[in-house]
Image (cartoon, rainbow, N blue to C red; front, side):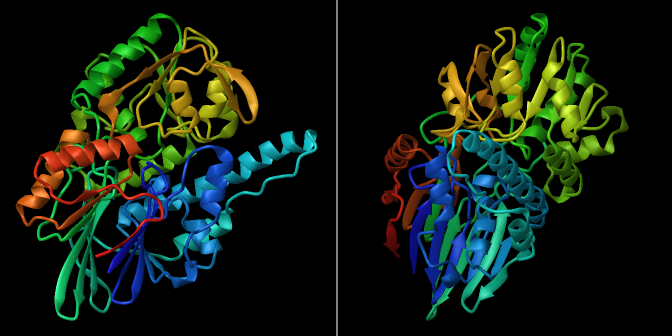
Length: 467
């Protein structure tokens, strides 16, 4: 058995790990790498292994940094199956088509600028046709139900609590009568988040590939998220400004809708219109309504209670699909909340709102998720005033804030608690930390070693480990 680490190794995005056992090669995630445009395009386009040698793909969840390069894999010649939970498949159907659309439209826009400057045109990483081909290869597996992938290799998904359908991946290997268990955490959620169940663990694990996004810091408690949102939007409303929230269309957008609905129901929301400006967000919210098997008890209770109303909507909340309606927000007067993807400002409608509203000091930009190194969101969060959007210079004068309590990723202490629960049911022989910037992963490795974990490693991209 061996593992090759090809993505999200000492970085956050582009999750991709190649596991080999019993002569079979299984790709764990096939995510899109986000960073500087040229580097990201080259890394996403060129796979560092023979694509046709892959026997199966197992997808932990639908976020683009875990699923977004599947159509490129298909374009490169992969013809096998892609295993996921049912909710992940349904969300991926919208996310991958949306990703293809954004790439095609963004490249078209950039190419107009390049043509005017006499430069060669770009081509999109993949098209909608490639995304559809990828979706045709999905096979869904329910939580906690073993599924034999190949002789001597069985798959099981357990709930990761990160987003709808998210899973930790369990692979049970029977090699010549000797049994081994690999646990790939995927992205681990936080306990007590709304809508979703808390993360699960499993015992008798030999090897763990574990995320470490926030391995060097702690979050504010989840119940602080609503208070901070209310404080920020009230302050922005008092100035007559707009609150721009870059948000992932899947997961964070639904959580924001849920918390705003709670504020509305309690009579605490100021008289302000809320726009969720994303066709993908609308479609994803519809998918959320289709999968109560992923809900926690509070969400199920609210669905059963007529008094609580719609947990993902209220009178002043408008979901926007149409592009022309989205453009009307560019000239919107007065206070408003605009929630739009992408969460890291790497594409999507939030870029247009930053162009039209980011230069007004009365407005506020509120980041509610992780901003990867090299992304526009990271640069704005770190205080950059002069930025380039669609290749053109723009100035950011809006107030920039960050809401740490909104993270859907477990923090240092929550991650440590998760892996300690795994250890309590059988100590792993080796732990590999991925999906974290280098400083975060190395710091978390020290934390685990100080808590008695003897073998904790932080692999670099391209590292091959024999088990």
